[in-house]
Length: 325
Ligand SMILES: [Zn+2]
Image 1 (cartoon, rainbow, N blue to C red):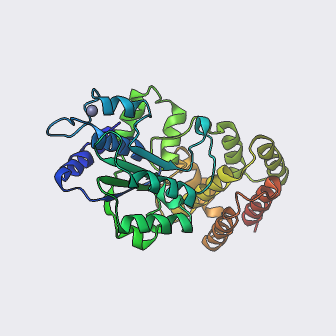
Image 2 (cartoon, rainbow, N blue to C red; image 1 turned 90 degrees about the vertical axis):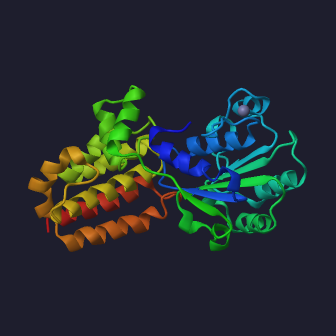
Image 3 (tube, rainbow, N blue to C red; image 1 turned 90 degrees about the horizontal axis):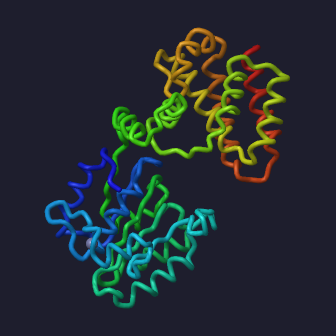
């Protein structure tokens, strides 16, 4: 699937069709539709008769048929979520996955064409896996193209990056994102809110705990001790990780800081006026930055089995104390 905002990128990618590197590194923000684009490219690389001119896959040939059935024997996809029904089997891509792939690509291709290896997200390779991949890229097997995908390419080994040709994928404009969401029949109030909340990135899951978020905002607007404690309890009863909470606090504090600096808020756009008139003067810049840095610090341990309720209480009470200083 090539999304409307990726059309130019596709043209510039296929201009180099005859002069392809052994390894590409596709990078760009998270949730902008990178995988759709790259899967299309992988299919085109394997297609027996890509369309002349734009090199889109033909969708008709044997190879295309196998690819669309997830069954092409010369396509190897390595990712963190290879389990059944999209369940994450592991947080990292481990060396075993790279080794298995290496063995397969050393043999000749099943269908007589090229082989394509997709690694996504590439920054999830652990150190051993990265080193194993580097060895392969140093002596690339014949007729094999590697497609690395990353939204945090600074976490990749620089030696891996230097073996790849880099290709950046664009974020849609606000208009493009809204048009896309409307074609999906999803242009309600909540979706507009989430688009802004996600900095204009139109792909998000449907399970956002919206009511809990509204409860959170209520507390941020008017922090009260009992409400903070109740919220922590309520959050923990519904959600077992702190991902959402840290994301919300981070964005909320950032919005106040932006407002204090005279900018429009970035994430909670519907609250722009309220933050400007009622909130921003209650806090001083130094306190906000200190709390932001505490949140960032604690967010590093968000996947540890710490007490969710306790951590929320800590942050919420700290925020409360800033408003009454
Ligand atoms: Zn085809």
